[in-house]
Image (cartoon, rainbow, N blue to C red; front, side, top):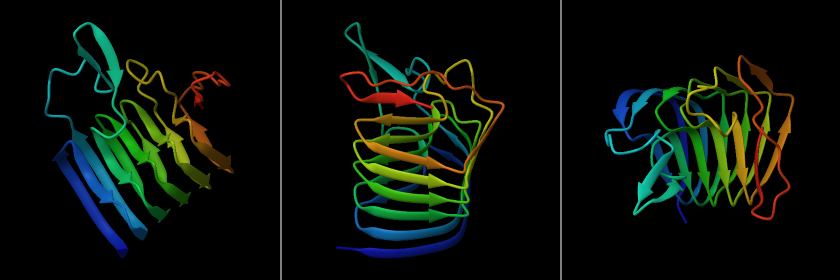
Length: 168
């Protein structure tokens, strides 16, 4: 199992993924990602794509900061202007504190079948044209929000549906 410690990193103007973590255990302090672009123009809205008339949402394609599996402690970090998810947690366990998420096309944070505890962080400028997911989106995971600030955004829906999805 890999263990990493990353601090003081700035990533700007890249395609598809800004900062990508695949498994292991890590602490990430001061990881700042700005302006991640999705190079594939075939996406309907940077969150959804179509295959043979069916629509799908990708949880790991297009993210400013992607954690795929493993455990992450993220602090004092930011994602701004991502054409996709701000922070995508895919089957990962994460503690996020003192971080800022703004201007992401899909949502500031998605937790897909993992666990996330988000404290003392800020969320702003939900992009209304695309962000049907609100600023924090949980799909069959466990997300705890405590002491966060939401500005110029919207709560789209809360759901206890059978598929376990909910947006905040």
